[in-house]
View 1 (tube, rainbow, N blue to C red):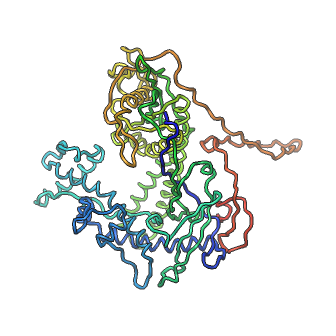
View 2 (cartoon, rainbow, N blue to C red):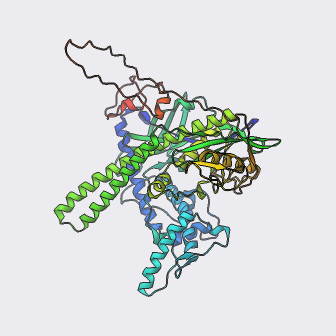
View 3 (cartoon, rainbow, N blue to C red):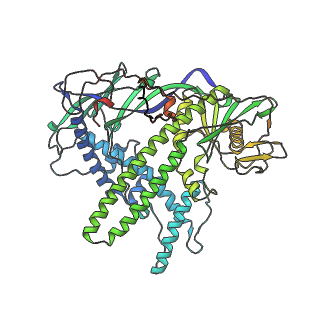
Length: 604
């Protein structure tokens, strides 16, 4: 339920591509290929400086300073990464005779400090586990304080590393040292990008008028600029996606520059106002259970004066075969990884001429594996938002104010075999939660995390253990005489816990509200149907306007029927292009119309 008249700000992200580029000094049109080259030069400078600074700071003293949050004079470190790096004296180095503006240095230090601060928690967790590790038994002692708690999966992985190091130290006759993150792994490889939000107007600024975004940014005119004159301003024009035209956006933020196989990509962020939700006012909740067979299933519980009721008729998400496709791509990627690893072992002892051939094959395998990873990422994103859209529609039709999802930090995939465990562990559940929270906030519904333990094994009515009369996917309670699909029963438990603990939810910045205590109240089955019937969008029919030709007499024609399209993309109508392209990828031209904003101007 939403509070009438009250809204709260919310940030979200979107991507777009420039379709025109103009030199800010001369107002001359520039080709998009030239812009890609100049952006590549700047990203190469940022990537090299960031890698050098990360390798120089990869030591335990760095994480000690970040964990303490104090500089050399005892002052608290500021939140801005570039300000903290300047106060600590952590500045990057550039090649000799190369001029880089100080605002670009801000981008480098901000990205580096952000990565190190993220890994500071991991360093603290590894040190805590190392202090609680017993080399004699090879086990971890139970934590004594809340700060020593880490996820069990992470603890098991570190315990294996500690056991291996203790064995090697025992064979060498020395004591087992305390482990730090710098002992476990090397400096992380960072993504080559430029977060312009760390800079000010001297490097970049943005304006939005009439659904058109204009970014003015300084780019180098040479691969190794030697002076300030070789950094010139460029105005990049990009179209705002049509689905954002009617949203109450109050602020547009500087984007992040990324280069992919299609050219320059602007990863933008914006702030909008959405209806605020009151968790304590809702009487209906939807529970979403992550299923091993599909992405998720949902069920509804309603609070009435006589208690909690549910019809135990859940809804299962239909991924339209994309889950099978993701499993196939995952198996193919793992096969390529094993093959590349085997060729790497062979190349280590092969003659020079054979080693060169093997390295070429390894490069091809790595390229194929990277392409598979990119394809899996795209499918996972589309699958997550498609699932979120259908789940939010299901909750809105039921009048729910809360959507309870399983807490992913306490959810482990085990007991289903090696293949199924690995497949479920790599599913896009985190992306689905983020997409669900983003989509639900637009209609005033709040997504909360609830404890996952026992949701599929306990009865929502009496809280006793359920039986499996029909196999793994069925659940039944003979005492309450309720049951059905295992995932639907789990959804009822999740919705019950969301309703009972919604007034005790813990809110942390940057996270969904969390319910950490699983309370119980009997949920009785009602005869009336309380959950809505989810809509089933039909696929678009494939129409062909080409007239059929009359076959010659005596000739048997082979009739080829096109396969019907069956994917989540068929339910989305393509947006009509409303802008024209005024730039080219090769040669600057005069303004001319084009069919698409971004795709038509980039040669394949």
